[in-house]
Image (tube, rainbow, N blue to C red; front, side, top):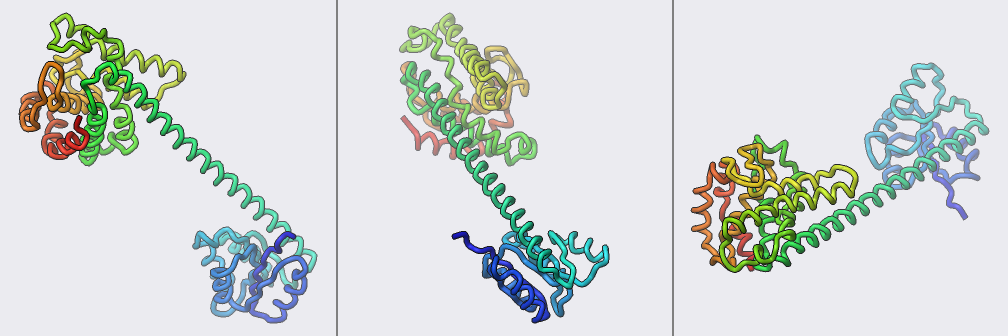
Length: 359
């Protein structure tokens, strides 16, 4: 059996309360009070579906009651029908402006009262159903978004692992550089120059894109990529093409998607330009200064620092202090000086990451 809707009747005249309760008691659960204060107390402690509210009452008028209800999120959607002997347009206009859904003039007509109650309760029920559906859809969208984000993370890691399995000396290089980029971007976001650029959303995109910086190494021949010695000039030219291979691979994914994507755009920038140098002497295009995308300038610092402190088949790992000394030498030539200064100011935090995820 369907539960009866609860109607709160508020009128300072006892006879009016009794009359209205008699009319509606067979169809609704009735709560009746003689003052605005008592009405608010009932609303605070009960599930009320609709309110029949007298306008003129001592101490707290119907207008005062509805102002209170509409100012509280938990009560603002309860329909309020004013009961009044006032019939002027200005009085009705004031009530509607305050949020009333209807007016019923006194003396009360039983058929009109029942019809108006039924109409507004049906309207509320429809709104509640729509609200529930909207909430459900929002929850589903949130779930799907989280699923897509997790899928994206897994896909990124899988793609990055393609390069990592080709170059097993790198160990936790991908994880460390990802965290370096996020840390440096977060530090910069507190600076006036970057606070509008490096929003939390952009920093997250940088963080997710960073593992793809060396994805192009899948296109480098084993005799070059895995050579247990320093590369010759010719071999280094071949190695340099990994930036183009990486950019092209990500562009292929973007074409398959059929639209531009901020994540893929950033991944292309990082993969293609992270070996560019501030003075224009880098590769593959010899970009200079701020023509190099910010994401790639951040990646350059992260990548070089980690390469210096990591062991390779052709070199031993450097001490942190020695690596920092070399990084300082590259200020304004290899690295964006402003970004490098922030890195150097927080070098201990980067060292901590390197130790936490060391090979």
